[in-house]
Length: 79
Image (tube, rainbow, N blue to C red; front, side):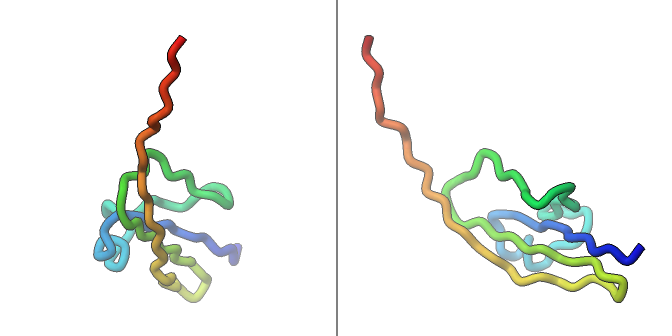
């Protein structure tokens, strides 16, 4: 089969994603669907990269970023 697989690398460390290899801390594996859940995001910049495994070998993806600002809920419910 000549299918393509995508492997996800994700971290709050640019270096970990840039240098990510299979089995290290940034390696999130091969997703089974078209999405990747992110839980318990912390404040700051987050980095990710998607590598494709083609019949000819691995094609290393670009590094992408997004920022998170977590705010506290100041809503109070007084009964």
